[in-house]
Length: 381
Picture 1: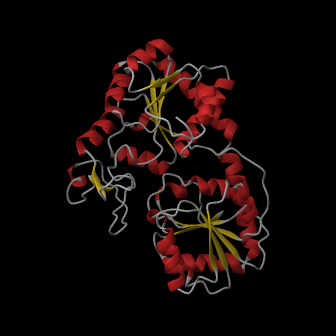
Picture 2: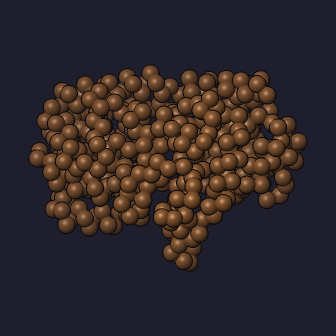
């Protein structure tokens, strides 16, 4: 309960809009985040239930829920209660947590993307149960393979599974989910004020996100050493990999062209976008969707990205930017050079991206389809 990341934002927005449409909303939660909890208390009112205090059946009886909409949730006892309750149940699959012990679906040693189902391979040779612990006293913690497999198997019994891209649909199918129960519902960002970038001779590249190893900023910096035209890049964000990337930037001779601006509030991002020429997305881990791409397309910015995960659902190679073969630094640099040299093409791709995101990722349509799905699942049961 409270603001934290994309899943929490999706829960809050969905509940807010459903309440406006006349539905009563309740929240089953494990703990609070300490961020903006008052707004959550106002939204859910007296229908907030803590998992430590009672079983799911008691919640359902008290609240009288017609449908249960599960997000990031791995409490096995309550998942079993939800399945056994016989009530309509839907699960939104935001990421890989439900079937990957590491949660990011690639090797931390080679960064090679995994396409295997949850199996004994996860234990050996993958060693996925051994996960880095950034919060505890020890550097690693043990993740239970049996618990992860149980979570996946319980989730298979839900009436619907909502995923954000075709790639995520494939991931569920690999893990034995019924394809007829999988529907694509990308978490559409609400449209805000738009602008058109300047595409000036400054040749400003924008990178934004959490600076962690899976985001591939280090490999992007290596690619930028092969860009032949003058450019600048602003890195918007913070994270555990920042210091290493700053040191690498200096080592590669990019420190005069790459600026690490740190965390920038959402409302200030457009100040950077206004003078930009291109958005670069360097994720090497298989992004479920990379919603930052949808956000920057609303500002008519072309995108260059590596082909990882669900990015190809919205980045059409040669249409609204370029989708580059995974980790191919030479090809990435060539595409950046091409768009910096041809500003007319960059503008055209940016406008095509704006048209695509406006047509395909409409916020009101998303909510209407979600409400219809709730009614359909209730009727089926």
